[in-house]
Image (cartoon, rainbow, N blue to C red; front, side):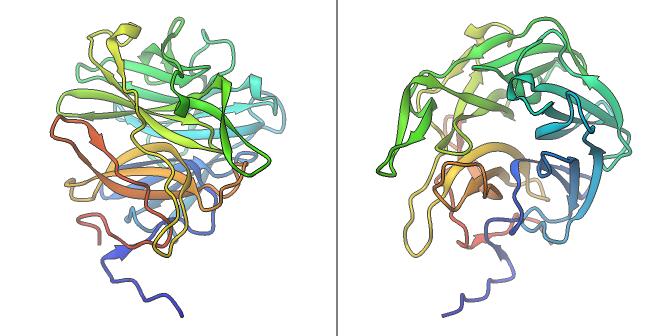
Length: 330
């Protein structure tokens, strides 16, 4: 029996069907959403523009940077993020020369979100080793910090939107079972690796004067969760200024009620509905429980807040399950 048509005020995940889009990043600016993601890891960087958060099929698409034919920015182009800071647009990304250990962070700058972009080179020259998943934290007093992953979550001060200065400080490490790496047993079940943890993809989430960092734990190709840090001290460069929650705040969902499961959900970003009334989680996930990164697609769902001011994401919503469109979306 064919599926019933969706009501006009509803949508279903994934919101960019038929296209892989790992590590999605979305922001709202002057009536449009802008999205970038790991869309072309061997070719370069793209930015999509759409008036609708719930439907990117007809989005304007523009390639704004092409990978170099060889060298340190020729391959493995991952997790780009587009930030609007001090009146300019900054596109951060991670790239390597096909050797994972050689991943470093780079940044482009533009006057408009779709470019043209100028190459500003490396973000953090003091961190001369593996680093991925760079993002910016701006505090209410204007201080800028560079957050990234390298065997834990790290932070470094920024002197400008394009430069992080001095050595970074590790503010969080994996310690819980759900933060371990995973492997698949011969019987098909996932098992946490006893000697290995992995956390990555720090993302700022701010509300009511409180600064949170939501991060991903596990493995993007296997079992993935979201964890939560909160800045409880004044100095983000002091590890003791951060409180780490012991339980994940988002994770895989089992199949049920006529729909499939949600596998490896994570590497998120956050945005608002067009009228500013709703908070939305943007993330990637897979429909198939397989031990590879193939099949990651972009998903969204609204989220709320607890009485004590913590984000509440709820269970991951499976592909094909109707959701109400974002408030104010036309």
